[in-house]
Image (cartoon, rainbow, N blue to C red; front, side, top):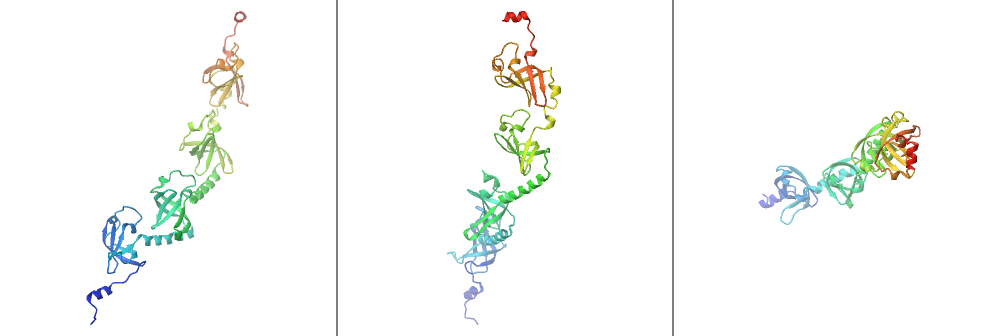
Length: 361
């Protein structure tokens, strides 16, 4: 018969454990902030909320149930109160690091949800292992506000893997650049000068608007926005607008766009609309010392020479005309090739008799 006491035999029936050891256990109790496990040791194991997950304030009773099996790592055999302090999170992170190492070596594309917005970038978690994506590697364009990525699932690759220095860096930018290059290749393969395409206004400047054609940006210059004059592109377009544009020119990767569609060319029927001898109306668009330019239609300006304003002597157009004033005049000359029209208001005035002229003099 053994000389050991019952307590000694009971204690020997339990396994011995050490700090850093990986053990299996079964959940015997769950509280909102801690989990208690039977790990086959003389004392139960405790997993605090912070050692279970990186999420703050989470209720553990919604994640774990009594009877669940768990594989954990021993942090302290005795936490000072006779219990074993365990961690689930750190063991999962170690496994996650191995997963990230393989992804880094194989250049694998990973997908994860953004869990935190930091000052210099985004933080995502892959199998409890944290990955930091610097702001410069979040997008292929400058991102002023990273907050929109909170809770969003994104794709990335691991560009740097150094867990000893706690540097596991993700890169989303190179995926976007590669995708855009592929889209550009596909688009340029089928894009032809003269095509009408639909795009989205990406940016508006003083000299024009950049239109996203689906992976390729085209420039709609201010001079190509209308057959008429456009003073300020920002008054015509807003970022996000959808527009149909004409492909005017393709030079390597540069695409020039236009809204001057041939079928809307105001000079197409100029021979009929502005035939010599016809009477037309228009608005004074601008003036010089030698005459006034009258807009007959968007893109069609005609010259009203100072000598043709009135039968009476006019020193300069501004003496009798004003910008925006509507006038009626007669077409006295038309040159379709050079797109020039000459007007005369004087021709519509009644001729004065010699007696009337003498009286005026």
